[in-house]
Image (cartoon, rainbow, N blue to C red):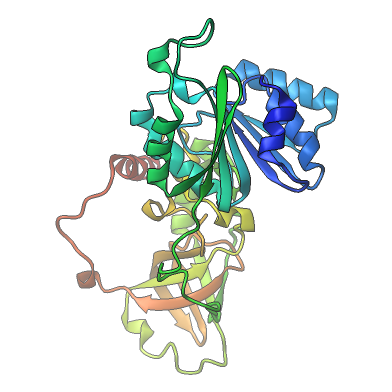
Length: 360
């Protein structure tokens, strides 16, 4: 570890800040940052070496550093950190051990995702010169090389400090362009529930949270639950004030139901990547490439069979929504509106479908 007073005077951590220590090793920097950010701040300590994390967790317990979250994590993969939540991302003498050309897109793309709009990236690396200790010179990265690489990911260099054998270079995340059309949308979108789902499904079989998706039960029990839900009857009770909105619906055999997954917690709506179905044996993929309930706006869709109508109540089967889910919209399912040929899905989705089919 470098002289901590020198390093942290440059980092200028403030109480309440969020500090992300990538490749934290024994956690010396994390422990120091923990004291500086205080109880209102947070420290994420990530390293792929399990022994290092175990040792750091023991230090956290003995030292009472309750604001540190230490996790085993490959830092060139998906980071278990919320979008736009980190003030300073810190990487000390790690990058030279990576083949940066192979991992830079994933690494700096994730760092940009978790940093606040003007958050900082601080890196300590060995000077690219012959020295009595440290990695071979051909492994070392000069400040100029780092600047060339990192600024491609919309960062600006803001500082360079000599640390003796090493150097500290800092970058600031450039905020998203105001020309981004999505950012120009003001206000909020208001959805009016048109009905509510009533059935015997008490809780979702997937649990969404800050750490991603997890199955509530074993894989076998989950598949059995999916099968049971596909055959169970549900009632969709439509708001009685919407007179006439269901007229003619009995002529359809199937309906497309859009409903709000109201049991997804707020931290589950900030995820951008998940293991589909909470299966860690399936690589993480973007939320919009899955049917996951953990979405920025948890509007889910299901095709159901219409079994009958009694006034403002529709009886359907195949609706996997939890009891009490608000209904956003209902559309008739017309198969010719959807492609029948040339449809392609990923291998992992095909695998999941086959597993559900075998269980049925």
